[in-house]
Image (cartoon, rainbow, N blue to C red; front, side):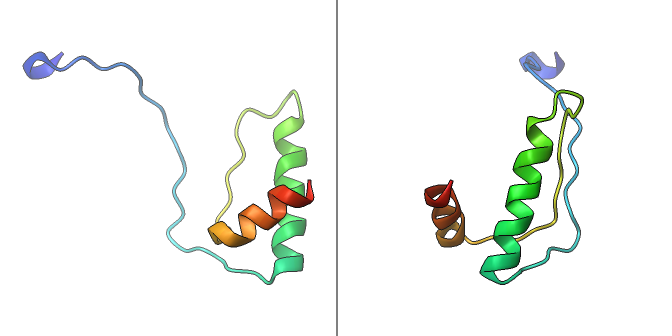
Length: 64
């Protein structure tokens, strides 16, 4: 509580220094893999350096 500020949460996250852009087919394959990994009970967090556009993400979500 420095200077009257209260910490509500803190977490460690992985931020990539470099990102990768893929064609639609490969991006969808990667997103499918990431989704599958996130659904596993033993997996807490999944990190990726995939750079996917909002448009491509919207098309992927429509496909699901």
